[in-house]
Image 1 (cartoon, rainbow, N blue to C red):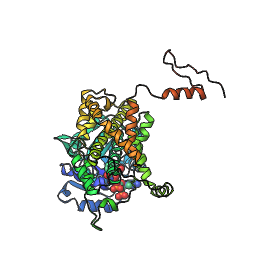
Image 2: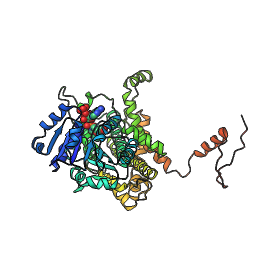
Image 3: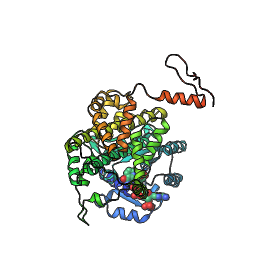
Image 4: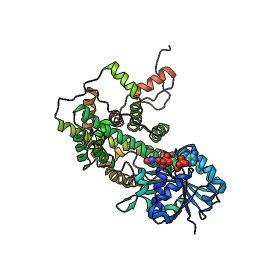
Length: 472
Ligand code: NDP
């Protein structure tokens, strides 16, 4: 009998996902544009070979799947997905289900859902997190599309997903683009997490003059506490690893220039489109762009001179404790921003995305898995209408206990020319967001002065008051 599931795109993610699916007892037809990769994949599939059938041509691949078909596409995001859909659809039958499991822009997913559903096909856009290892042994999967179609593949997705205390990290998060949107924000938050960790490393390295291995030990310790997370854990390991070639600390032979594929940038763009601030995440995206311009940074260093970044005043231990709290406060703010963006997108698009579920399925399998997600899940479960994580009692307590340290660290590092773009953006956001009286009265006055835009008064109704400005 033919399998009812197929997967096309046997790259890094697709090949591992295919093995994961087969490993969970599902027969699977596989296809890849480059045929040699089909052979290579089957050769290394070992015991799972019996569950897999390989195909070189799209037509044979589709003919080799029992109807109604479920076909997972795990190909390069962007126009490739449209090209693969165009190649598949002429051979499909009504009722067949296509799944785009790549990192697609949710706007494309909304469009593709409509087009394919109009043609009588099902379509799900599923964000998959966890990299290569996650794909093979249990990713976190964030699905969007029709609930009825999701129900058809729910058992399979639950089976292959990472488990957190036995619960699969897989969920349906709303219609059409909801899953890919949540994946985009996951990646934006991931940028924030990574950048803030890098910033605290910078303070210890360039401010306190600590060696990589010693910093690694600090992260190891932090990993036991409220900051416990996969990203802290791997950073601790990275900093204690030596380069086999030179014997140096490996971090010192790695170039300080980070790339990006787009999802982080999309998270910043979408938050701006929605008018929901995600400044800590945005700052992290900006920091990557700054990192990429290494040549210009070197030119600027020659122009402005190398600052003395060494912090010699206070006790090192005290600063390390303050850094831990600063990182926690910054992280809470970045997550508060990310979740507020998801909430706004859900409202704008009518997705009804369950925020507690989002936090729950990020607790295992994905890159941002952390102990803090338990508390985030509880905060949204206790109050699904929660507007900001910063308003949740448990997080307000944590912020009250840590924001003074974030402030101390931002102030201290500013004086020593140690850049903390994400952590300082987080602090500014917090200080503005908690301020009942802002300075936007100046903005209103300026807008009225140069553009007669009108303003609201504190002592009268109406929004069309004007100042007695002299023209010109
Ligand atoms: P790879 O580069 O390893 O694989 C890309 C796949 O896309 C290959 O199977 C390739 O086929 C196929 N492909 C590319 N162009 C075309 C085309 N024009 N027509 C048909 N097939 C094409 O990428 P990954 O596996 O890393 O990524 C796949 C998706 O998963 C992407 O959307 C990525 O963003 C996402 N993702 C990646 C993660 C990661 O950690 N790598 C994590 C989470 C999501 P061929 O062999 O013929 O070139």
